[in-house]
Image (cartoon, helix red, strand yellow):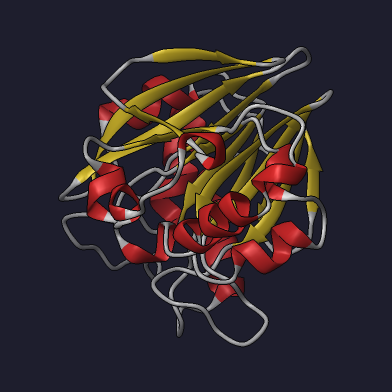
Length: 246
C-alpha cells in the first residue's frame, strides 16, 4: 500500500501547501481520503478522478471537503469518456446535501458518485482494501479511518481530540497519520497536539507516526520534537507530494 500526501495544512491552505488530502493506493485500487482546498490540483497531477474507486470525507469542516464538489462536476462533464463505475463517496450523514452536490441535477448517465453515509464501526471492501470508520470526537460528526491492505494497516485519525476511538482505529497500525493541529503544550476541546499524537501512537502500538494538519504558526520542528519524545518509533511530518509505503 502507498499513501501520497496531497496536502497537510490545517484550517486553510497556504501557497504551495494544500489542506488535508491523501491518496491511498493498493494494486489498482485508489481512494482519495479528504479533499481539502488545493488537493484536487495535486490529485490531477497523478491521475484522472474517474480512476478513483472511492473518496472518504472524514467530516464537514471546509478544510476537508471543499475540492470535492468541483471534482465531481469535472467528472460529470467528462462522464462520456469514463469506462468504469463512479466512485463511492463515503462521508458523514447528509454529506451530499450539506456540501451542495445533491442539488446538482446530474443525469443518471453522468452521475459522478455513489453516496454512502457513515456510521460508527461500519466496514467496507473497496477493491483490494478493507475500510473501517470510527466516530471520533471533534465537535461534529467525524470519522477516522482504518485501512487494511495486503501488506499492512494505515490508520488516519481525521480531526479529533484524544479519545478511545483513536486507539481502536490505530491499534497495531504500520503507519498512523495523526493530526497535530496545536502547538505542543496547548489544548482545545476538539483537537490534538503533537505530544498527544505521540502518546496515542505509543498506546496503540503503532510502528510509524506521520504528523499532519498543523495550523499556520505552529512550529513544525517543535511539533516533531514533541512527538519524538512521546513515541519511541519513527516520526515524520506529512509533507505535500511525499509518498509513504505501508
